[in-house]
Image 1 (tube, rainbow, N blue to C red):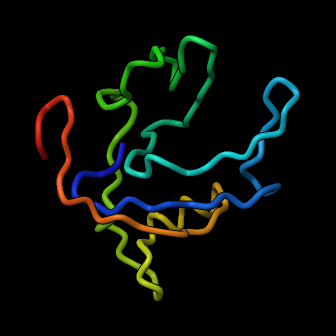
Image 2: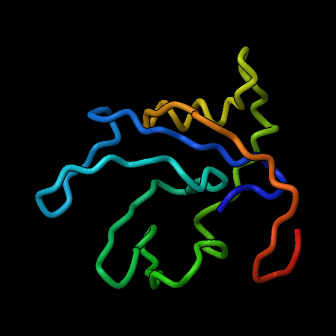
Length: 117
């Protein structure tokens, strides 16, 4: 999920940084995405082939995290921008999951289960 009416950022993950995990013996890199939400509690994530467990709540792969009460939309305007014009919120995310912004899209409309935003 991305904050409505805010830009979408394309991130290239930096391999072998703090964003690498091993799953079933394979090394994978995590890519920051869905930059609009953050956890209000210490984040716990587990997964299976059928569901994702976020903060103790199971979500089938066809379900959305949109209404998860332990998650909230980030409000980038609270933090402002850095000297390069990048929102400080994005900079903080990239400190935890290292990567580089390689592109940006400014949405012109959004459509979801609640209609147009």
